[in-house]
Image (cartoon, rainbow, N blue to C red):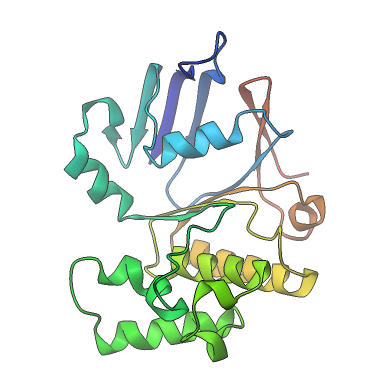
Amino acid sequence: MIRFDDVSYTYQTAETPAVFNLNFALEEGSFHYLTGASGAGKTTIFRMLYMDILPTAGELQIFGRNVAGLNRDDIARLRRRMGILFQDFRLLDHLTVRENVSLPLSLQRCLTKEEIKCVAEILDWVGLGEKMDQYPATLSGGEKQRAAIARAVVNRPALLVADEPTGNVDQAMGRRIMHLFNELNRHGTTILIATHDQQIIKDFPAPSLHINEGQVAVRKVA
């Protein structure tokens, strides 16, 4: 599904690669953590998965397509199969919480009754059912994160990539979110979660892709 073959990426302003000679795969329906110190290269990997940047060396295949041969329309179509959770949330301030969460479903058409119901259910699940008609500026940091999570999962993506999804929520909500991710995974979503939360990894065990000095090693479940 996702395959890195000797992938490297060097930023234009850098002398050395941010990541180099990456060789790993995310099989369809798999669940992995991405771990490593700050600055180790996790964000670079995420940006390549989202095709915000493309490898400067090697081959990256996403959904069986070599990203080097994709045009803008191809990238847009592949992104619609993904759920992406950024650390800075990226909610649109001029849209309500409900409208933000609905975006992956409503970019090209009006929502069906079933999709409207799904949006409401997801917002209830993350504890924002009573705030769906508010705007992001009125939300706390944790509430913004939960809204971003709801948006990332509402269309049952084929691939979910989440950057520190439990970083701004309390322990109980963090576990609730992880149960939601596990449920998605059981229904076939491939999941990659970047996290420093060792308790989450212990409570919800899965293999880890550990990045150190720009390279990845796979750590199996203990």
